[in-house]
Length: 346
Image (cartoon, rainbow, N blue to C red; front, side, top):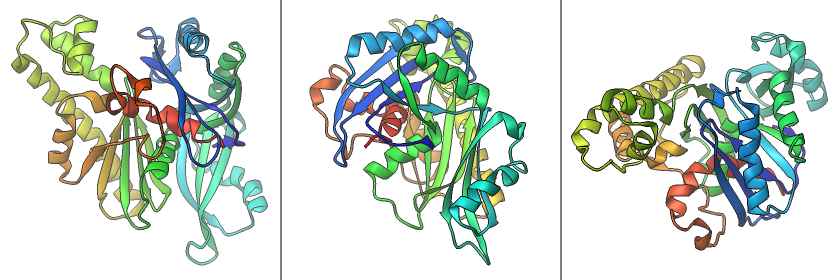
């Protein structure tokens, strides 16, 4: 949400993988290049970089092997050091809003206001009598400085810092028809974190980051079935080791899916409590969890509304050969955040 637009690389630094996406400039987007590189386990824990060299190596691998055509980067941030709030304040000019936003933010941001970077977007300039609705975003300067320093060590230029919640929203709005009064829930489940963004008419009603993701399923499989990490990771994607019955995995899956559903449910209850908005009418799932067999069906049964896997390339042209051997259907949802960040280019 911070900065200007130009042709960029969308960089998603996850707790198990680094993803980079490069799109063409202009309104009609085409996928030019992408890369996915593993991050060593525990190099990033709950959004915090523990092993800086491991993260550098993951990004460096992609930069050196994939041949991207620009060094300008849009980076996503999320987690406990990032706050997104929809607030109301007195209606005023954009310049006056920018002046006032720091004082308004002190009511909502649980950090020292002098240690954060603030930005905002007026989403409803005519809310009530002489009021406006504003999306307030605050990110700790320490987080931003750590990430930008990381990129500079790789001779990359960070030009925009966005939130991962809004990155997935960019993807949705670019690829799907936005119905003005429809409430849609976007759920991106990565290895260690789940980003839940509920939107209406092109603006966010509530965005939350939850430290629960695919790693929880892998960990359960290791503890309860006795798999090593690699076998557990493969089983989470549906590849069961030889000699292991599907029944032994089913109970673990149901436990994971139930916990995941509970986290989503709590976020929707929070939305209802805070905004009084009506029920969500549909959901879109992206991230590594989109590859977990039967998860989509479980969520459909639990919530009783249409749910589908988000396709970030629905309105973006690409050469199918670029996704060999896995295919765009599998890889695309994993790239959703990186695509959303790359869409900030023009």
